[in-house]
Length: 173
Image (cartoon, rainbow, N blue to C red; front, side, top):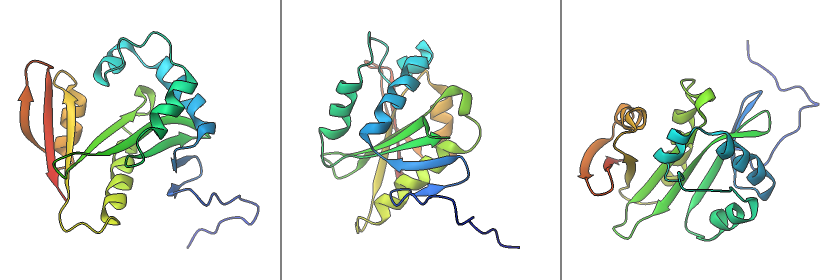
């Protein structure tokens, strides 16, 4: 039996994917405060993995600038009941590839949300009308969960940078 949307449910025209509680939505200044709150609540280890371990104070105005500085980047927030619990970013690289970053707060991991964000990014790249598309994930090599996650998605290790303790994983779409 097909599910029907009750007529009193609001429709978000910017929403890419929606369930009753989970949405993948475009950057919005309104959500930056919730994003910053997610970062403030992240563990020290998680912040190290995403390169924010030296952040002393997460300021909303700085993150609005971060998300709007490069018009070529693509950002989406993962929200649960209107609160940001993760994000995905795509950055064009000078070699024609795209760098992808995915983050899901620790208490929401293991539920498929990382895959959801990855799929949203792939759908975006598919709409760009490129003949080939290469995605790279640059990950802290001690972040075993992230390395395992990207390998599970079909990425393979391209290189290792011992100076910065990072591995670059790559996938052709």
